[in-house]
Image (tube, rainbow, N blue to C red; front, side, top):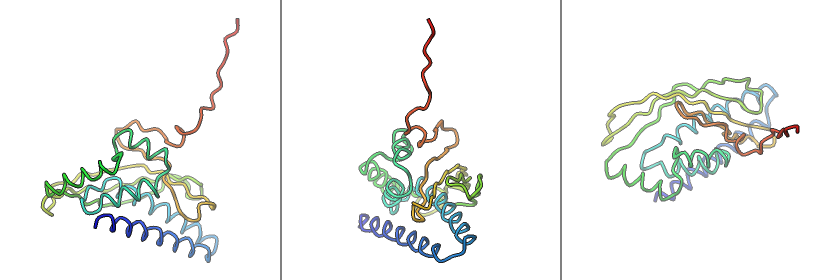
Length: 193
């Protein structure tokens, strides 16, 4: 049953993004820019919701969409190696089983998604703030505020489907994943003899 929810969730997300891109094609340049900014802003908030999701009913779908559709591969690998997101489907299922056994869950509430760069750029960073409300037996037990910086990329060649290229996690030393994936441009200097 969880697998079917995951497929339905992924299919619904793709249909919604396709509909947005088709609507953008029929708009004035100003409307297209606003829709482009809105698509990236929505992506930034959605990525944080999926990243922090620990609800046993939705975590599998969240991790599937996060790792397959929303982030570039180098960023996914980096977050998995740093144990920020589960590395395997088995790890996701262990989180699900533990949450079900303990009757624990959470709800992610996004309070603000603010652009930090000029939205006309190909890559735009957003400050995403909100709270992670922990639940036990369906009742809130506490909340933890959060603030992340999410960098989204959206070019005309991407057909309206924004992708996250970087994620700055408070207190972590995560560098840009896209920069890590590219070869170094530094030249070696030879010592003169």
